[in-house]
Image (tube, rainbow, N blue to C red; front, top):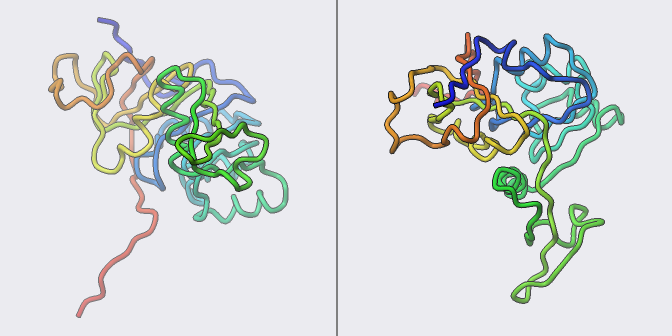
Length: 233
């Protein structure tokens, strides 16, 4: 069995260049590839396109790349927690493509499955549909959406083994499974890296065939995006 383990995030990110397109898993700050994002910041890659549900917050997640103006274009479905994102978008410094959340997920999954495009009713009759082919199915109009094309996909999982098999934990499962195998190179960072045969096959969420590189992350801050507590009575 192929051992896909690499020594660290620096090795995992070999081949990254300016102007590439990246997919990054996560929803809010849950399940984001923290170590990979930190390495992209360290490498100071420029003019990149990021496909991610959101852009993190001002001082964490993809917000760190926005601070250094490394992102040329964001393809997202929700961006309401980042003031710097808003500033760059309104000033014209950042190109933004907003996509219905289900369509974003399906465009990732289409790329993962090798399907070039699909029809969906989401967005018909809105700005989302401008310039796209439309067709009627069962009395309802649909628009043609194309699968994403990305150079690297950065995934965060709870556990993984040397063959690239992955298990996600709780809501960190979000966009991560759909992005595995959807880019030319999928890099998975995990909290715990175990030998092949350790994971229960019935518990594996993503088989290793969808992963090219895997490493154990050094640290995980795991911030809470919106901390809500109950008042003491």
